[in-house]
Image (tube, rainbow, N blue to C red; front, top):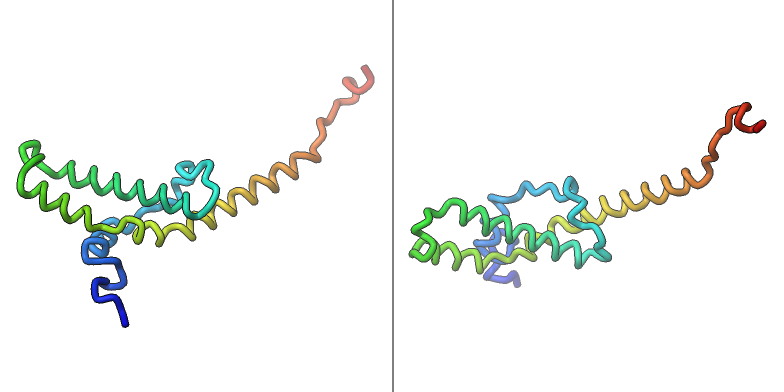
Amino acid sequence: MPNPNKYNGWTNYETWLCNMWFDNFEFTDMLDMFDGVKDKDEIRIRIEDYIKEYVEAFVESYLAPGDIHGFIHDMLNSSIQEIDFRDIAEHYVDDVASELEDLASADKESEEDNQYHYVMLSPSTAAA
């Protein structure tokens, strides 16, 4: 039986809505943020943190300075707390992992190719 708390395949309405508004992250164009990651779980955590910080900054940028402790701010914070950022992040992990593997493979091939390059000496340098 499907989970009655799910919304259009997402954890809940707030998660679905967040993904609908912010579904254009191109993490494969921001691979430097994944330097040093060792597995998909670390990739997911970095994506999750990035999206959460992005959404929170977006919301704060639209609030008037006087709304910091007002009703609207409280309602928005309540909704943000319901967003399952992990659920959203999981949709990007495989693409990023694949790009990182391709990049690592290309770097390794490049290193292997460079291993066999020799400096060519001109005849005048060789005779010296």
